[in-house]
Image (cartoon, rainbow over all chains, first blue to last red; front, side, top):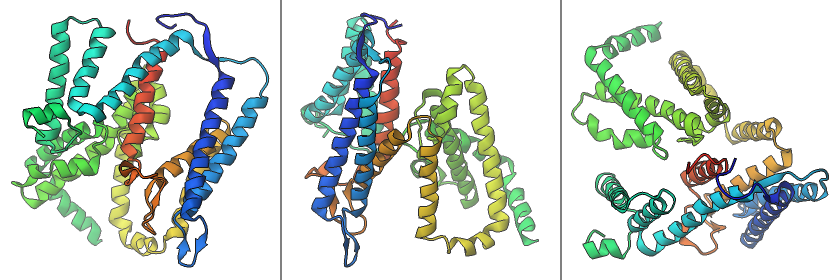
Length: 167
Length: 230
């Protein structure tokens, strides 16, 4: 089914459910913490700022605690959540995407997009260099024209645009 | 029946050749705008407003309303074909439209979405034409408690009708509420859950959540199923 790697399970359904339930519990706890900081009571002039999020987060916490317990005590055969080969494929896109997002903050969206597209075309697509350059640069130029020129939507820009005097 | 007379008068104006052509153009532009994620009916009307500057007021209204209707339907196209809802109101179309498309029956799903849009719009227009005086008096009594009751019913239905265990649905749904609470509190003006970040002042945009959850999630799922790089 998967293109590369083994059909070995990377981790099972059970551990995935435990991790997700724990993450939800953590997120719920963060919301509860901030709501209590703001005041989650009924003040003299109505509900305080944290009133609604506090009870919402209580729901999140209780529901994910139940999920956590259910996942922990669940018996029976543990199905594979994701296989090693599948996980490699997913990570091969997910990790560059994270780097892309970090690059947007550092050098603006247009340069980062050009690098991102070029990287994927060269690394996974194995296209010749002239095609890589044409598509990645053309893509950024087209988006620059559409968003900055025609729709007047300012997107994050970096040193490159400043160098060209476009920012 | 004053309404019928007004309606027929309206049709007489709308059914001229020029206005029919404008409807055609408006619907096509609207569908294009609806397909683009993030551009909804209201944005589309706003962006294409300059097109109508040279028209008569009636033609302009006809064209803009057609753009709006077209965008309403266009949102269903991406929901069915890519499982990415273009607009908030086409999220429900992904539930059964996308599975149909996966079975190779995308045409049927699109036809069903279009037909139901058409029937719904027609019924709504007829209802509004004849019932708006009655509805107007009733609408004033539809206050916060009634809205709360309707929303509560909606979200209880989510928990009840989901195929997943109810507590998982509850946890994800409530996390969605918590995400919506990020930003400036509309009542007191206090900053909720921003933790000092200026980017979170306005909260999480619906579009960001949809592209992240549906768009990127769908791409990763496609990869996992090994459909790419072959």
